[in-house]
Length: 133
Length: 133
Length: 133
Length: 133
Image 1 (cartoon, chains in turn red, purple, orange, brown):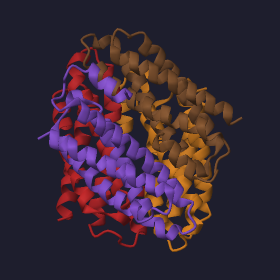
Image 2 (tube, chains in turn blue, red, purple, green):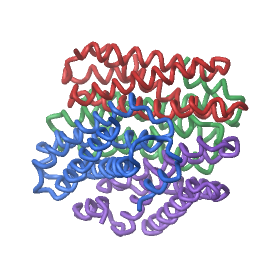
Image 3 (cartoon, rainbow over the protein chains, first blue to last red):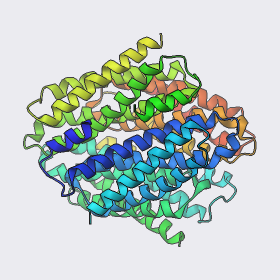
């Protein structure tokens, strides 16, 4: 069990969304941010770097947005749907676009892995948005 | 003139929002993030810290969300309203709440300054959202 | 296997430190940053919050420093010991202090978990520093 | 006067370094982080992007390290030279390298501006390190 889930369990229900869904989203957001940072670096090392520019741009935005959303959702005591909802919506959009672009470059293993991280994150954010309704 | 505006002027209109409005938003977002980080530290040093908990929580979220939105809007070449819009909407909500809470503590000069930074940022984000329409 | 290790394996040895040691450090840094963010939120909810101020301050610094060091070490292609070494040294110091302070509050399960994350991160950073020699 | 200096003045000397030197460093770190983020985006849009790869990699590291160091130094109440010193040393090294690389591309106005931001930040960090002795 990740620290995320353990730490959520120590909070006496400050938030009213399912802890499994929240923990899965936080972990997927952290993993996606990490994958996008690493993928940016790998993209910059490709010989056909001019074909990777869109991928790099999307990875930069995706890394920043997912990292911040992981931080905000990791502080559930002050949970505010008016703030979390648009953040998660931004994550869904950028993960979808970044994942789609990475899938165009699956001949590069780093893009294949990053696409997987983006897809998993998009799904986890959608589930959290659903659970917040 | 800040580096922000100078740097935007070197980009040959990759984006189609007014450069003044965009630069003002980026600078206000950076200033607000900075003010919220400093205000958190000052809040933690107050004798009545139990009364500052809500303020601290809001400042933590506001700092992270504004910092990331400053980064995303500072990379205008891949500008995507589907991503920027919800991010800016999250900024408007958190700046409004954080500014409102800080105004309840204006006896503390650091909260007065942070309230001003939040209000200015909220307004600059609203203007950018309007300009994107 | 985490995305971190998989992604490092796609990079054709841009760096000359052991990939296991590097991947372990990146994962420990990300986990520690995450734990410190969550612990800050939990600390702010404790009844004896005045006794948690030092813990909160250390967690805030530890979260930021570990998150950035995770990002920099996740971009190994431009690996520069002149930059990575002081960053990792800053991590060792803050993780040691933050872990020590959290251990003073192990009656709070969130502090016990955060102490564990800090200790593991301190050790992983020391190992990476050793491997860089 | 920036919010930074105003906010420092509200803290009753929690730290024992000159407030002017500290405020100048925080502002230079924030400006440099901002310039590096914007320069990365502009570099990615250049036709000779393959010649900009080193510049992009350095800007990515410089942006992250300066942003985090700005945050840590903006929380002066828990000021700890054992943490701040290696962070500022990492800033000096990365700003020097990033500034030097940007100077190789001064035909691009965005690199000229970024070089200036890096040089100013390097100097401000050196002054803060001196003031901490």
